[in-house]
Image (cartoon, rainbow, N blue to C red; front, side):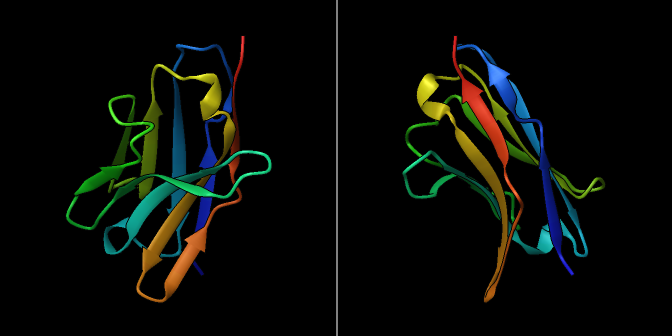
Length: 115
């Protein structure tokens, strides 16, 4: 069974940085399109960034130039480096793995940007 476990969330001041990690077990990240999504209170879950099997990346316009998605294949882990964080980045961040009809989610990690 595929499991995704996020870590690295927390409280940070505006302009600060955080790195989220998503450790995957039960399969290999190289076969999935891996992604990060976020959901703020009272809002829908939105795409933040994805990375494909061929290492192609895609970002939401709101995070371009500030966030970077990457993967460590030997560690079977996907990362989201978040720089120059803003209060509007506050949300629960979820890791996602998708391959055709198969779609897996982590439990989420809270990111709060506040002074």
